[in-house]
Length: 399
Image (cartoon, rainbow, N blue to C red; front, side, top):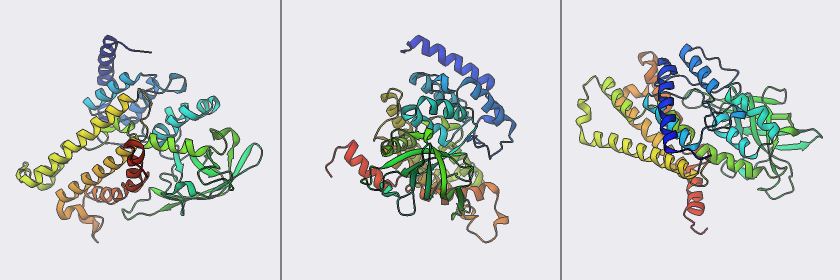
């Protein structure tokens, strides 16, 4: 259904007024964001109130159909909502693998039963998901995965191992690629299934990272059960579903609304002034100032490119062009935290020094983020693999 320019202006005015009245002060700017996990309890009053209000309006997933808990917004309306949220620095009420990855994939490939059972729970922030893709011997060559799922009538029994399963220790459900025909060529014989994490056949072991945190996990399956009703798409055709989900992950669509939850170059400059104890005097250094300005320009170009790709996709997720977002976005993240670390000087190495008592919580957190984002160019498909995709499927270069 097309929306006229006049109707869009009315929607903008209504949205602006609603956000001004109902977005709590504590939901503006950096702060906690729900991921829907039943195992993580939010305690911040404004964050909880904001989530409740956005769920009621369907704006945790604004462009999903209303029948699945969404806001039913057109692409143009969705972009207006993002703009108005950014204008008041409102952070998203919900950000999860459910909203950005499995939800859009189910909208495209899921049965009506699967949509009715899973999507409203995601929209209401009642469940968080994790991704069962990589294995110890199957990372960049994901199609060589060996985790087996054997047909047992109304369910599959799954045996094998996944690794680098982000958030598995907090997840309620997993979307998982499994091999259902071991005799087929490696890109065939793979199926895409959904399974609950809270069952005897699933064991999660957190991996302690150099940053000191454990966002990643090893996940072991020993006769884990996935119902046949949760086979997404056709049996042995899961590679198509799995690739499409990665495009949703790399599209950056959800990041368009995350401006209020992420620090940008302005907060980076403010942090520099605070850390240096100066009124911005250090920013007078031409070389240093040029680096900040280059980051700001690169970041704005990136956001504009994302927005244009979303607009041109007519509400869907762009295809192979999402690999450009992955490469450029991950390198921008690394640049951001490199600049942040350099601004703090020796204060930026709190987690590496032997005596952490002398560092503030913000300084320690900054060091952990810098360490964590060293992996940004590897996870979600390494940048080397993404450049191959860009070369072949975007630029049309020969093999």
